[in-house]
Amino acid sequence: MLDNDLKEALSELLKSELSPVIQRLDGIDSRLDRLELEQSQIKQAVLETNETVKRMEVIQEQQHTIIELLSARSIEQEAKLKWIK
Image 1 (cartoon, helix red, strand yellow):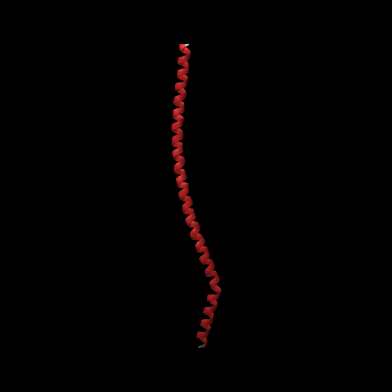
Image 2 (spheres, helix red, strand yellow; image 1 turned 90 degrees about the vertical axis):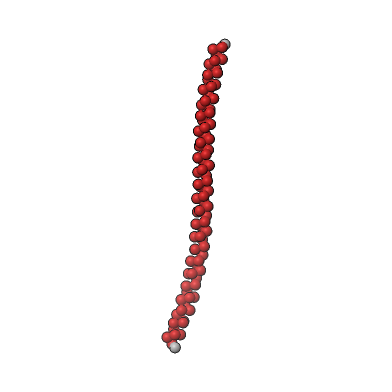
C-alpha cells in the first residue's frame, strides 16, 4: 500500500513539474509550424519574383535590340538627308 501511494505521489509530482515544460514545448511547436508556413510562403514569393525578373530581362533585351535597330535607321536616314541636301 505504501509503495503504491509513493508511486502515485511521485507520478503526480512529475506531472505537475512537467506540465509547464510540456506547455512550453507545445507553444514552441506552434511557433515552429507558423515559421515553416511563413517560410514556405516567402519561398513561393521569391520564386514568383524570380520569374517576373526573368520576364523583365527578356523584355529589356528585346527593347535594347529594337533601340539599336532604330538608332541604326536614324543614322542611315540622317546620312540620306545630308546626301540629298
